[in-house]
Length: 286
Image (cartoon, rainbow, N blue to C red; front, side, top):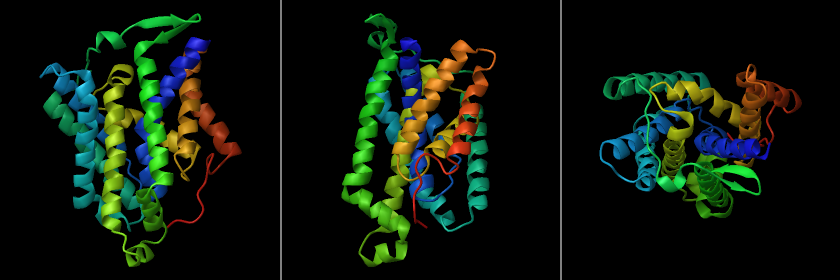
């Protein structure tokens, strides 16, 4: 039981890192970016190429995946996304879904449609027992790394100047500009951060989730469930939602293998009946 709980927490932590960028762009920037999974896939393929073709260490691949996805996100924000900030949400959905299909087709053409594999460092492979609980080394690594990232992100958004500027820019961009805030720069930095976190999550998830060209379509529903249940007021809600869904998904697939794939949807329905607007809601905003 404790082993299942541990694995579920690791899975939930990974889901949060993958989805928190979507929570930021949707909740704070009010932009529906359904192409978020494409940035995660980009980080995963950067890791695969660096490890399998160039023999680089897994530890070097993680910051490289973050940086590559962040640069890609910043470039697309400047050239494409910012033109749609004032557009209806339907236009944003159709545009970002179009990017997803383009990314899927591009990766399938250049990398092939097969499942990608990597070899973890020896110190991250296997399990060890602690007080009778089987603990996977790689899952423990994910929990520690994702916990540190979560704390850093929460402090950045709530305790720093850039976090205050972002909230001001979203609530009233005209007033924020009048106060001397460079709204365009704040948005591109925020979009790059969200994309970079998705890329890092994609790199971490190659071993646990698998990686193929359909990754953005396969896991988009998971990202949306995390954000929907958690709400869009802050990252606290999506964090708690990701942990809950991770544990529920792992436990469901273990105890009810015939129904395991549907447990996560049952949890979503139950939460939306009780909390239609998510665990946390945000007042105001544009």
